[in-house]
Image 1 (cartoon, rainbow, N blue to C red):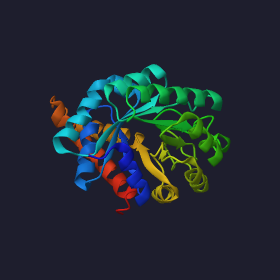
Image 2 (cartoon, helix red, strand yellow):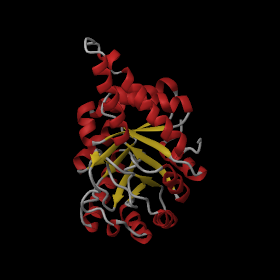
Image 3 (cartoon, rainbow, N blue to C red):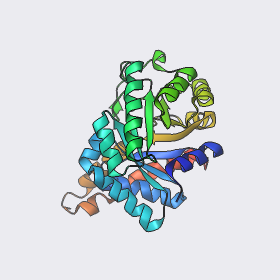
Image 4 (tube, rainbow, N blue to C red):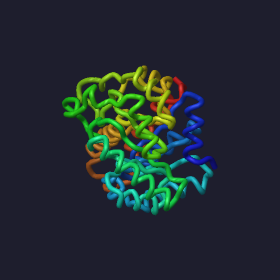
Length: 287
């Protein structure tokens, strides 16, 4: 079984992107995994602090590893958006394959200090765990938005040299830069265009693979351009949440007497699977 960093490097050399999809429940998990398995593609399951508090920290890892061990399948667990060293340590000790330390809202010097400490703590526990850092602010919530989050501007995007300096000082394994992307999904419009030239610049100087957060709501052609410019992993969450909710609402409305959760929620599994299938095909140039 290849390690996560090996899978990411393979995607990078092939100019495709690994799909990273968040879960809050078992329906999301099976929808994501079913899509990946049908296409025979590696997959990363993400859980933010709130999501892993709901699902369970060690329980998330156990779920992912049970599939990996049973089927010898390249599925990995990522502790998404972690804000403290204590929670980094918790995730690493629980067995996550990667952890995101999110200091994007902090001044650059504080973000660097936090990331450097996260790397040091993580590597002392398990040198194989990847630490991803965010550089530049893109908002914080995976939800439907009325407007672009406050504070997300062109000035929040880092330069290639800033990212290179950040990696050199911190030792981060992966970088998620602000490149015009936002967390969440605009209700009545596509999300803003990505700055492809900035992605290319950062890719050429960073020295580590690049991850795109806030993938929900981005246009298909923009994704293709971003992958070609150097993005190796893409996060999707809001699109999954919306698909799950819409399918669940219809299922409850259509089946008012049904009380079996596994019957009511099957349509949500299918809805999530369809979203993930479409994205994985796009990220791997199958469309």
